[in-house]
Length: 183
Picture 1 (cartoon, rainbow, N blue to C red):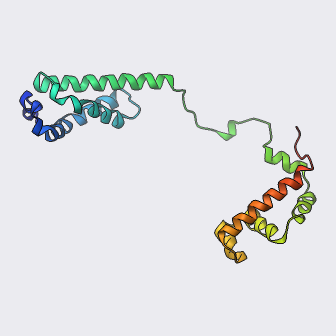
Picture 2: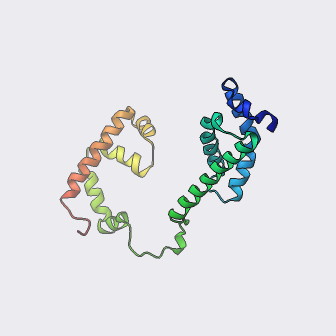
Picture 3: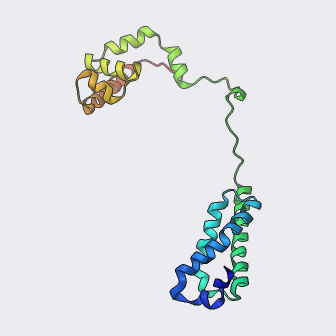
């Protein structure tokens, strides 16, 4: 294949696309192997960057196949160095292990639920119109989707969304009078 990579063929503008194809097929696996062996995080992406950098300069390369090979691996080496620098600056990623999480702070939801009694929740819901209570029961308690709730209630999905928005707004107004959370 390197016979097709002579200096004359590299400078032939008419053969540009086919020359790049030959160059890519000839060196892609070697560049990928080099980048993989050198510990690049995403060797395939780095290889593509190498060839994207080489493509516009194919007609300026001197030295035939040896010069081309040297140029390609010089670019590959530069991409490898860039990747190692980026990796050294990036904090290490560790998986979250819940069994090792010993925090004692409760969630905001848990704290709110501790401070409000079921009776108070029922009283808040009683302050809502029947349709709004029904939407909240189907959406939040039963876990229905908007479409399922609309089907059960015989309404459109838009109407269900509007009822839910109004119900939650009304609950905010009613609950704003009481303080359920510590400041």
